[in-house]
Amino acid sequence: MTAPAPARAVAQISPTDLRALRLLAAGYTVRQTGTRLGLTGSAIAMRLLRMREHIGATTNAHAITIAVRTGQLDLTETTR
Image (cartoon, rainbow, N blue to C red; front, side, top):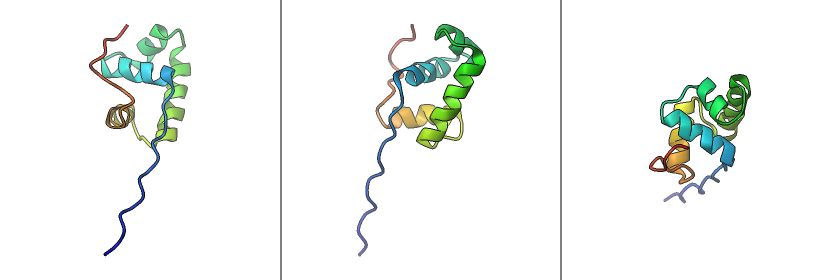
């Protein structure tokens, strides 16, 4: 019998990136998300790219799924 694989460490997502993911999940575009967060569209796109690399996500939708599954993102919260 083999031992179970060790639990994989959960990569933490920054509060700004979590706000961006929440907006994307609510249907906002990357540009609209940037505007809502006071950033340019290209700045938020770069943040999202780095965050996806950090957590091992291939797309923004994948990043949202990872954030929800790891308990970092609650999609029942309202978007402000």
